[in-house]
Image (cartoon, rainbow, N blue to C red; front, side, top):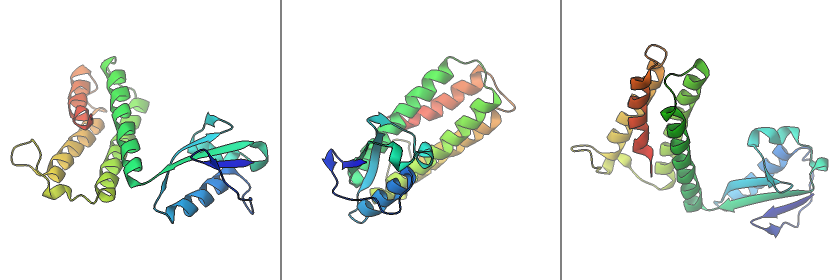
Length: 180
């Protein structure tokens, strides 16, 4: 198997790695020593989900491409991903009049993911959100984000009781706060 990092072939041999999850973890450990992060991955020139790596044996793979970057690259990639997520969810919700149980669960997971993104963003950028002023009068960055996150969590949980167009619109209004 050929392993590439940012289109440069690695001169390395596999030792105990049996599947792509093992290879991924080894590369991740190696690049993290240099304060770099895996931003993307392609197997045989196709994008794959991280969850499928364990089931892919190294013998079955011809080429493995890693795309890595520094902290700023990671932040920019993640912010772009958040922006696409907000667009995708917004477009989907805009077309619905009500949500099923699976939709509600997915929204609740999405809210948790947004919370993780914001937390990681502030940590990587060394930003104290509570020291930032935002356009909401009398608010600091952390307060405003926390307030929006609480409303998103609350509204996602309330879909079990109030599952109509008005509830969806309220959720979308808060979700748009994370549009970049």
